[in-house]
Image 1 (cartoon, one colour):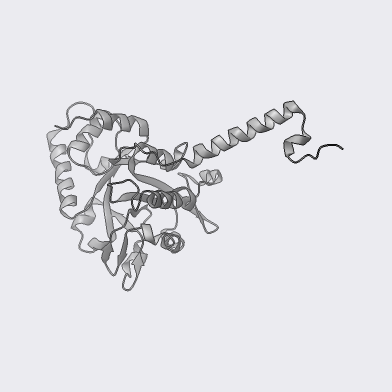
Image 2 (cartoon, one colour):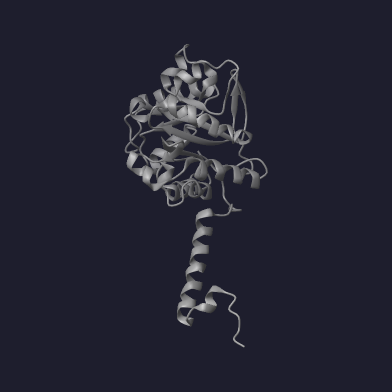
Length: 288
């Protein structure tokens, strides 16, 4: 009696069988690489902001593995789904906001007992809306509601803390936030420097100040930081902090001299496109 073949490899020549086994071994390793496991020795970098995070080899996961406490994803709404990308063409890469960012953060929070990193109360997820902010918000709000147990929320202007603060930037849905009575918001807006002195911008709707570096200073981290520019910057930082708001600059230089100055002045989020370089800067940084 011939033996009964019980496995797929029983039907294959030996050489092909080896190739199939090797293929599946590589596939499983690759999947593990993509999914990642929470590192046990990551030092959180509280001011590390992963700019254009969706361009990483492993969006969200690379930032988490480097200890970053803030990430940014530009999004487009298509067919009820949010896809991360800097341009419309990048939608084809199918980087899904919910799958890559929200689900990953929830898994980390569940694994760590209530926070993204042990000892770090708030992680920041910046969502840059690229088109039609009011339409986008109408779809984004119910998506965020699914993850309300991990998000900071605001109801009738009263903020409730959570392990993740979502900040809407880019094209902000200002109209949706004007009528707030009886509503719960699962995100806040970023604010400009001018919003700090604008009585028409309610304090409750601003989650962070996010300003164009070039509008505040022209220094790019080379040579001495002009005293007048440094004083202007410090005044803005102090004003934001006096209102309990963290501060970030976009369009900013990316070099160690510049990062050192911003850290010394206690800027809350420092943009970088280079996670490992910034982590090395953090490791070598010597406080004054």
